[in-house]
Amino acid sequence: MSEEKQNMEEQITQLMARVDELEENAPNDSLCLGVMDGDYDKTMAAFIIALGAVAYDMEVDMFFTFWGLSALRDPKKKVKKDLLGKMFGAMLPKKASKLPLSKMQMMGMGPPMIQAVMKMHNADSLDELMKKAGEFGVRIHVCTMAMDVMGMKKEEMIDYPHIDYVGVGAFVGMFQEAKQCWFM
Amino acid sequence: MTTDELKGLEVASEVDARGTACPGPLLEAKRAIADCPADGVMCVLSSDEGTIIDIQRWSKKMKYEYLGDLEDDGFWRIFFRKTS
Image 1 (tube, rainbow over the protein chains, first blue to last red):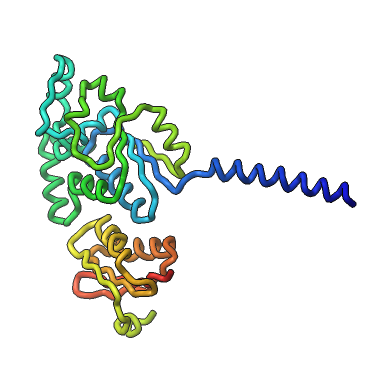
Image 2: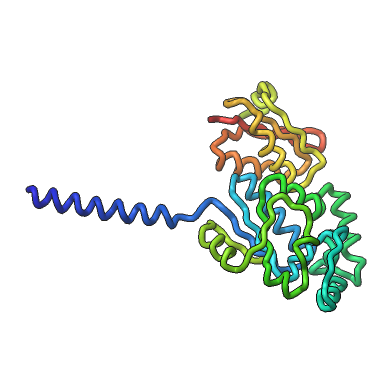
């Protein structure tokens, strides 16, 4: 009988250890979004989903890389750059509201048209969505490698309350702990 | 709840999100819920029909009690109770 009891106790200890391990590895109630496309519509979708998740008390981490970075530029901030950096800076959209559309770009006529229609329907502009995201604690993480490649500096980024500068290691850490990760 | 029951509800907190589009009304509800007393009824005014199902699902997840909606002139009153 005592042997049986001992076995039971051993099994319980093992089970407890497994439960602890599982709990430690359980995902957070968070959403992780990778934003790589520099398109106005896709970036807007990312922020709308982020804000929807916030309403559900989820924490949201947005990782911006490559073309996605244009959405985070503040044209009022001037920084010194080398020639390549200047070229990239001149060719890429200067701020979120200048991003192109993924469809119906129509040589530049598309975005102002869509923005006017959105206004007509009271849909928030990308700028407004980003402001709300800041208010609701959505975190923006900027890929430093993409910044280097495109010659972008921290000093020219928008004033956003929860912004930091990270590498892929941070992003992988985020989506490992998150319940969901989307790359758009 | 029936229409009459909804009309007779004592609303503790009302948020007017008319004229905002998705995700505006849901976010307004989320923002205002903090100031709504426990067990109080909250009413969200929205001109976006999608808000009805949004609030239904959201209140289920938040463990609030969804009460129903009333259609008004071009907008909806959406009711739920902040059950604690």
